[in-house]
Length: 251
Image (cartoon, rainbow, N blue to C red):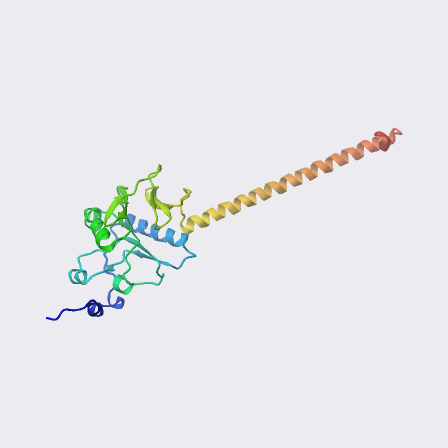
């Protein structure tokens, strides 16, 4: 049998239109809400950017062997930078110029935790060469992050709050109210659109209250000035009754 070239092999691979995502449902409502939170917060924070793609419970197709076996579950969350935000039915590596994710987050569950901590740790390091890998359990709050060093992951050291820095995101990842959230380098939590709107409403109400208080103070000062003038006018009138010119008192 004649040898097949890499170019011929690529032509034989199915294109993205033939490869739909083949992922099961999320393990629980906790997992679903956590995934939604990761996606919406990052999309809100990067709303002015068009150079990234977020995959949520989306299959990554990367080899003929994988297509044959269909034994690989895609990441719960992954980020690819330097690409477009165009919708995709799956991430097909050979259709994306050989690009693999820059960051992956797995949400641990009873059925996936062992694979996420071990087999996927090795796959993402040695095959994907993904620079950063994190996993988090919405149930137990187990949380860990790793940075690629050649083809091996090394643990990312936490800061004083227990947060882990992500170079790919430019944010910390940390736990707040039993959820995995993004935090800026300055320590501010990256909000959801709803939280951002609530914060803006709070600031607007504060500004209105300050303006109202300033107006009230101005009105009080005006009233005091008018009262002082009225008192001075009454005193001047009394002095005139006594035959005293008020204008000459200070001379």
